[in-house]
Every structure is written in structure tokens, then in C-alpha cells.
Image (cartoon, rainbow, N blue to C red; front, side, top):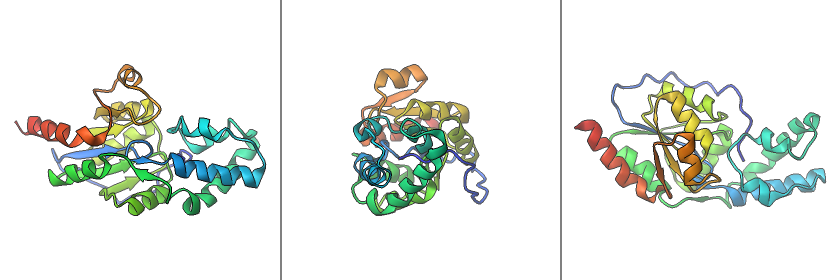
Length: 223
């Protein structure tokens, strides 16, 4: 599940190389189907707290930070403790059940094959994002966590991203802040109409079509 929006973990300063292809990806429901793992972590949370949670509803609307979701189920003063319990359970329960979405590995590899940089910018906390990527053999150049919506845009701009790929309208807003092309995929909670209405420049059903799209995008940039 997405983590709380915090000040991002400090990263070494990246000085973008002019015109170097740099593509950002969201994580949950863009590169990975984390719904089975998130459901498993929520089941642990329910068992530990006794608080009833509609887990099917939770995993149908992934994207915003963890605390935003927990606020639907816990009083405000109980949310931090619930978040702590959830995060403690996450590594042992959420990593193994989660899977790579179709085209995810190939899309990251396509960026690298063109001599570019692939980065992941996600609302999930960075440590858990890296566990997912390592477990699934997806190898971006950089992972930046604990950022949501417009805050993603600041990191994308600092990294020099020309494209940001995501499944949520919040990802579209992040791309807009960065001045990057917004490419939406309909593998998450937002359909094509929602993504386009939010301002997505391109919408694909999933990432299987991304490598071909990227090759054409990069050819146009080079022309």
C-alpha cells in the first residue's frame, strides 16, 4: 500500500544530462500488481487491531498514501499506530504475493536499451518499493519513495524526466508539475476517460505497448 507522504529520503544530487532520455514510472498498479500483498498485510492489521476493514475496497483504490486510506477505518489519533503495524507486517506478508504487471520488465529494459535512465517515483515508502523491485527482478536506475501527486513532480523535475508513466490521476498531476509527458495505463483504479480528463497525453491499456511507443517517442525526439 502507498506509504505516508513525507519529506523524501535524501538522495545524491542528480544533475540531469541535457536531452538524455529519462522516464519515470509509478510502482503500484503501474509496474506491479501489489493487490495480493497489500491484502495480506491488511489481514494482519485486522487480526492485530480487531478493526474491521473492507480489504476488497482498499485494494480497488490504490494510489494515495497509506495514512489517507487508514483514516477511513481508524480514528485520527489511531492512524499512526495502525500505519506502524501495517508497515511492520509488510515485508513478510506483502512482497512475495505481489507480481510484475505485463510489460513491466520489458518497459524498464526498453528505456535502458535506448541509453536512457528509468526511475521509479512512488508514494510507497522507499524501502518497501525496493524490496518489491528486487524480488521481481525489475531494475530501475533510481527509486524515490514517499511522494504523492504533485510532490512526485518535484522529484521528476530534479531527475530531468521527460515522461512519467502512472495509473492514477495523481500521477498525471505529478507529470504536469514536472513539465513531463503524462502516459497513463489503465491497469489501476482510473479508466482511460478519467486519465484523459485529468490531462494524460497518452493512454495505454497496459505496459505491453510501451516499448514500441517509447521507440517512436525517442525517434521523434532525435529527428
